[in-house]
Image (tube, rainbow, N blue to C red; front, top):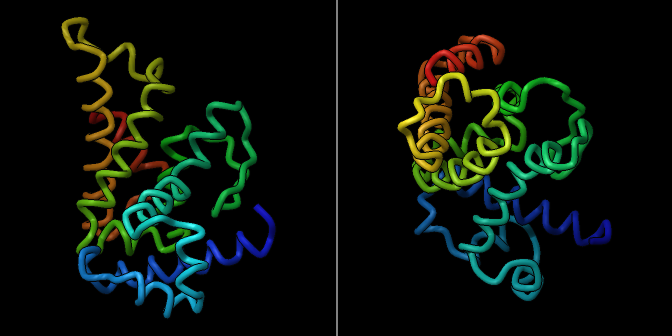
Length: 183
């Protein structure tokens, strides 16, 4: 993707995030998104088939930088985030949340948070699978792997929800420790 296409895509993402913070996903129209992003309808559709695809792509952009880095063994990565983290991937996620990169907190606390948290959990499950050795000592042998992965991802999502609802008073390091203790 060339620089101009990346800028257009970022403008659409930013417009969409702004609208999601104010309105329910179902009430947002493509027309509102293109007005907010200051792009044409054809430009929008050259990047995204539908508003649903835009949401899916936004969620993938928000989370894939971490997943890509764990798959490739890289510590430095860039999608819509810039970072050079060498910490645990879960601490890494909490640090991005604390910094509120790309207004992610507005999405997680907006009226659309159930939809957004669902995408978040789907991506987390992939991450959890790659990090299962961290949790192996805690797993009961009677539990199927799919249940265990779902449980860990759900615990992370609920930890994030609790942290946000309680004003994020704990540091990313402390909330990561709480998460590990809760699993």
